[in-house]
Each structure stands twice: as structure tokens, then as C-alpha cells.
Amino acid sequence: EAGVVQSPRYKIIEKKQPVAFWCNPISGHNTLYWYLQNLGQGPELLIRYENEEAVDDSQLPKDRFSAERLKGVDSTLKIQPAELGDSAVYLCASSAGQAGDEQYFGPGTRLTVT
Amino acid sequence: DQQVKQNSPSLSVQEGRISILNCDYTNSMFDYFLWYKKYPAEGPTFLISISSIKDKNEDGRFTVFLNKSAKHLSLHIVPSQPGDSAVYFCAASWVNNQGGKLIFGQGTELSVKP
Image (cartoon, rainbow over all chains, first blue to last red; front, side, top):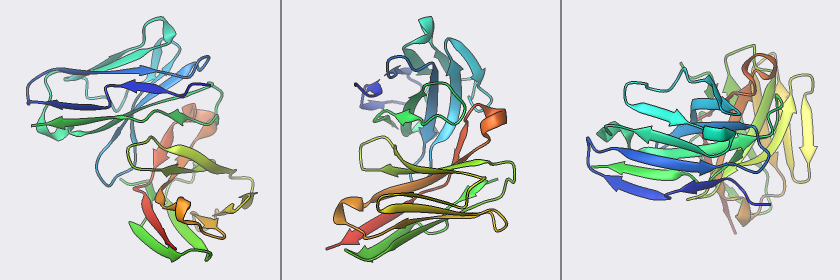
């Protein structure tokens, strides 16, 4: 079974530029999560989708971040414009959707903003 | 407000000995706890979990202990192997109210020396 796929794995951009990350969850997983992981910290939830509905986006900085999950499968996370402080690893995870289900993480996208 | 804390950023253990990783939490609403393991350039992978109705869960070399009164959990690895060298994150969840949203600690980097 294929795991959670993310691309790109690495991205270097200049500040004020836009950037987008893509995630393909495990087949059949209804719940999709985007996490932000800063160096030396644990992942922090940005947004959670149940199918195509964003059910928890309270931690998403909506002035510059946006996300979508069209058709309830793949998801895209966008930052526009990027700031130096956005440099981090962006992790996508998915789960079957039942409360307490294990979350499976992708390898992440390491973003460097210069 | 760090609701899940791992106060030891690193731990070094000799191969064959016991590794004990600790985690403290502040929110008494948490009712499900998990440990994730992370290798460099990979996403976290689920290791073991425990429900708040239990005080111990064992899976092979890995045992998680939960002390609800102290709001403390620990992960024991016996015997430790060099392949266990990784960053370990504890995470907590309110299963019934938050759809499985995970709050992660900062991580502890375990190094198992041959």
C-alpha cells in the first residue's frame, strides 16, 4: 500500500514569493491534515479536512496561507507571500477518519525562505 | 502554552540497555496518547498508543506507561538497539471532542550506541 505522498520534498524561494505544496493521502483515507514543524519542535496542526470540508482551520494564518482539498482526495497548501519565518517542514498526514485512528505522515516538504 | 512537554531534548543509551523517554501534559481532557518515531528526512511514524483507561500498553520491546494523576507518560524500550536511534515525539488527543487532533511534544532525540 502506498503511503502519503508529498511534493516537492524541498523548496527554496525568496521572501514575498508564492509557494505551493501538494499532498496525496493514502487511498480511502477521508481525513487529511497539514502540520507545520519548526526546527526542534513537534508538528503543529494547521488544518484538518474531513473529505473536502475543512473542519478545523483555527491555526491556519489565513492572511497568507490557504488550502484546498478538491474532490476530497489530494490537497494543496499555499503560502502567498512567503516570509522568512515560514521556513519549516510542512507535513501532510491522513487517517481513516474514525476518532483515535492512527495518522500516517508523509515525508514532508522542507521550505527555505531566503 | 505547551500542553505536551518533553523536557529532555536528547538521550544517549548503550545498546542492550533500557531507554526511558518521558512526557508530561497539562490538559486533563486528553484521553488518548501516542508515541511517534521520526528518522531524518522522513515523516513521523506511529509507534505505540495508550488510552486513558489503561496505565500500561506493551508491544514487543516497547512499553508505554501512563500516570494520570501525575499527568505523565513514559516510553520504555528494552533492549535498546542502534536502529532505535531517532527522534521520539509523544502526542495527546481528545478523541471524543476534537476528531483525533494531535498535540505534539517537542521531541527527544534518542541515540543508541553500539
